[in-house]
Image (cartoon, rainbow, N blue to C red; front, side, top):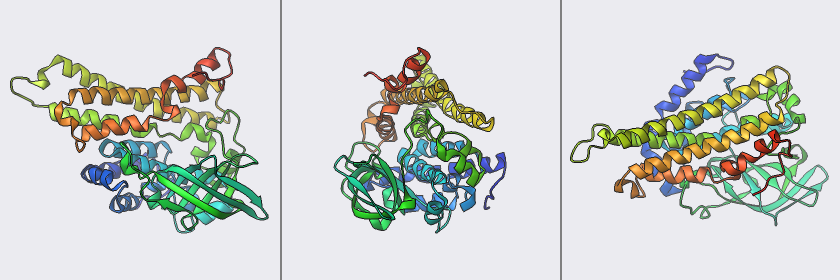
Length: 393
């Protein structure tokens, strides 16, 4: 059954059913994704066939007009079985959502081949450069962590230059991937490899000044994006609706479920299922997952309601969103640490699901916004009457 745009809650439920139906295959392929340092082509095709990537695509280009939070629910579902797949999926879907903020000329070019466009993103290093030319730009540089690049037709590139930072969109023909560059201890299946760009010409419509990590001031592209697409998601600042916390939450849920499955019905001289300590730890892990999930989804709904009312989120709302992301990451790490401690010697195997989820959740929260001590500071400073950007480590 093909889902049509503009449907109600039934469309969301159908999409989540499709995501859940892929779980057994993702679980079976998780180790292979680690070994290959990329999600398999078979998995990518399964996601495309289920139309799950179209959640991020604007409806003008064949996307699905379901709530943007649905993509995060799908990512959490995937991450329960394979966090790398959840990570790659949500980035591809997010990038499709990002395209709605670009000029219509850029959107039409990127979506020319249909709604299932896949794109990665990368930030070039300090030795990279861009320069303005008549009709466009020349871009060169080396960037790291281009997750999902093996399957992508386009690349979002953030590059420093003498005139400041710019963001560009490059087709696959304009950059090279260093196939052996992703040799890491966690999130191996994301294939977040290095990208090399050598004097690529980028037409003017595929370059712009990027938005800051938090939209404390109204994005001038927001009104234009809503005018193009008339979708609810384009009424709220991008920074309130883009999030990678979902994969850590999904991975934590998968770890808790794996422990429950192993412990249920255990017998012998040490009956783990009868242990009040184990019971308490499992109960705490599951409530932490539920709390983290609720914070993520409720924040996004609140941001969209504010946009629908014609208002803009306050500084306290924007910084509370950062705070909650950081806390959801903290909860997710607590879950996998607790579960791993209860997993016994079996979880020491590098091919054990608990081992993989423990590593992957830690890795997924290693950015500054995944650190509660950093992510919570802007909120605390704002409510105390201080500059929310005046962070102190």
